[in-house]
Structure formats: C-alpha cells, structure tokens
Length: 277
Image 1: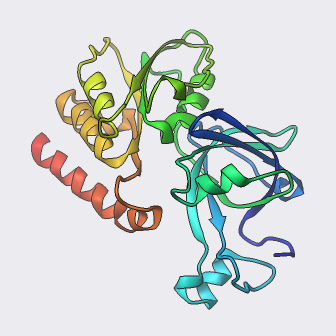
Image 2: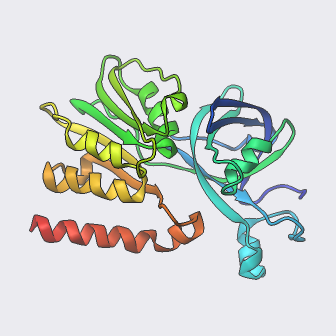
C-alpha cells in the first residue's frame, strides 16, 4: 500500500518489548506520524487498521473509500488500543498489547512485529484525564485498562490522593508504575476466577474516603456494569464524576461488541434510571 494516506496515520515499528508475559509494548514512529497529535487525555486511543491479506485495495489506501466502494467482507478490521505514551519531540508512539497466544488479531500481530513493519491507525480520540478539582481518584480495570491507568497515574497532580485496583492473571503480570501522586496500588490476581470477579469484590468492599471522587473504571463489560451500578446506585456518584466503559466483552470479538455496545449502554442506563427514580 503506497501513496499519501487520506484518513489514517501510518506508523513504522521501531522496537518492541515484552514487559510482562502477556503484555507486549510496541513503539512506532516515522514520517507517517507527522500529523499525529493528542489533546492531553490519558485515555487517548487509536483504532488500528488491519487490512485483509491478499485483497487488492484502491490506492492511495483509504478506510473511508474502501467502505464506500468495496463489499463489507473486504473492509479492514479495526481494533481499539489506548495510547500508552506519545512523545511529540521524538514523534514516537507507544502502544501496549495484551497477548494471549494465537487468540485474537492485534496480539499475534504485536508478537510478530519487528522494526520496519507498518501499522495503520485511525484517530486519536479520548475523553478523560485526572482533574485537579477532585479530592481523590479511583482507578479500576483489568489488563485492557492498564495502559490508560498507567498513563493517568503519571498525569496525576503532585501529591494527589488516589487508589488503583488492577486485576491481572497473576503476580507475574504486574508492571512498574510511576506517579507524582499519593497512590495506593492494589494488584488483584484472577487465577481461575472469571474476569472481574476479584475486582468487583475489592472495589465494593472498599471504604470510600470523604470528598469528591473522580473515577475511571474500564475493562470487560460484565464487571464494568457491576461496578457502575455500585458507584451510581449504591453510592450515588453522579456520572459527571465518572469515566466508565466496557472496552471488551467476554465471548464477543471486537466487531460484534461494537455492533451492540450502544444499545447495551442504553439498557444499562435505563436500568439505573428505573432504580434511581
């Protein structure tokens, strides 16, 4: 695929690193990121574009043009990933991929990526950053939320009070976190339990400090729904103080989850409204 990109950024893999047994870090750069800019959100994300192999796409390549002119089965597959870091001086973009062997699309790509490989990306987007007006901060998530949580901890105001509950498979999956804040990090080990069970138990039994909380809760949709119910209904925290989203859903691939996510969110909101009223 050659030519000037129309609606995406084209990064070139510079180096990779296995930062945990199931987490691969990929750093990309190159002239194709000359127009890439972020807006200060710590949940900044890109949609990685995976064209189908063997398909002759129009050039210069454009996701929009492909969707307008080609059958749906040829449309590139998209996978959403949080930007772990962006260095505007070196123009280097860091992405962390959860890796489960041959399962999925992006993880296997990251495991096999090497210097010079290309990565197409749409975006970036985002909407959250820890604010100085909060009395304290709450972070809760699984591996998929770990890059955003790590970026948020780094962006906390000096001395800001925060609690981070992070669920991973086991102690070997912990990664180094840094922050200028006053943060208590609680690593939760899943073991053989369902995703999110340990996280829900820990957050629901946590004694919330006094004051205004700003919370970031992301990861598998099932446990996100439970924690949202606890925060909204159980504790009465307004949505304006919360950033909550199901990044993924157990048993569904990214395409099928995106297809129903909007309706799923509406149903969750309706259920909460019925209780609150």
